[in-house]
Length: 446
Image 1 (cartoon, rainbow, N blue to C red):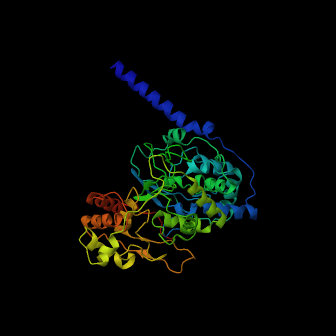
Image 2 (cartoon, one colour):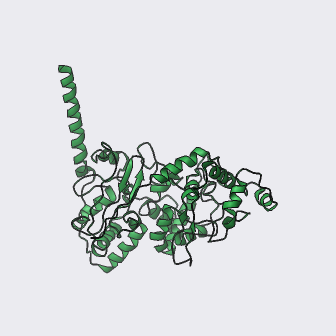
Image 3 (tube, rainbow, N blue to C red):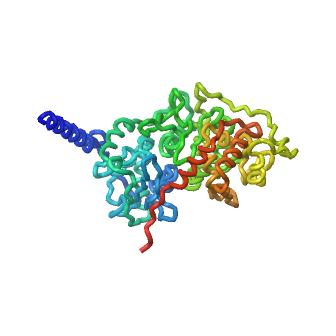
């Protein structure tokens, strides 16, 4: 009995010590950095507005149908839904009472003014490299130009004990160490600017870099293994490989990347899912120089050692077969019935209207998740001033799992494409994910 009591007391002591270290760690791990900022400076405000666009703040902190920056966007995680918070200058429910030091520590270090750690859904592991002057500009913009909205934050649906915040301090100690942006040797100014945007405010790695066992990004800048920006799955969408290698951007010219970021389309493909929101709310507003710098930096990322540098198509035997009325291949009939009217028998679609399937890297991507979700649920293109019409692909959830798998395998291996095999169970898993997408929080108007 004494041994049990002793062990219990030791356990309580260890828990208490662990808790105490966690809740006080921000004092030494992320000390507050106060500074005087003129939040009425029009030059600073304009810069801050541009940087907020570059950081895509509005997309994450605005729920569909909700007010800008008021939060409520539901973000799907393996454990439950996390809702984005109100970052308007409302003093009751937003960030209106934040000093500059509070703001800086929340954005770059992921710590609230009360010392509580933020969920890493907030990409502070990327924002930590953002320069002081840029953080000050953001603070001026949010405090003086963003519309004030009183809207309470929505609690997550994470179950206990996973909803406890204090253990996140240890996650930050392990995976969110302080660092500064450093340019690679030999980079020119344009590539250097692109690297700063991609690694920092644009936080491209948050979606496009694989996650580790702790749900941490396995690389925060270009690394020897080539994990950085090599592709990852988030909320059922495969954020494609952005490295200059076979299934990445090797088939894309620099001008095609900038066109895609500016308009959400190019002659070969179109943005969909979360990337459509990124274009609509963020990249279409960036200057041509910044878009070029991003494209140039991405094209500078070398292929991984175990992956081909270039993608080589096989011989196209699909077009001739379909035009000759040979629909014997599995999925061929389904493709002609459901897809060919838009994407054509040669799989080339129509430039800027119906994306090509032949030679489209998202079609033969290593992970077919995006292709499956797009086929089941449909998606709309980004709305930008460049193109007069916004097109939406309908979903085909009415087809059976086998029918969809056959069609997608036909597409992934047609017209010279070559991709891995999709099973019926892959379609079933995506159906389940789509059915359990989070419901966004938008309070009824009073």
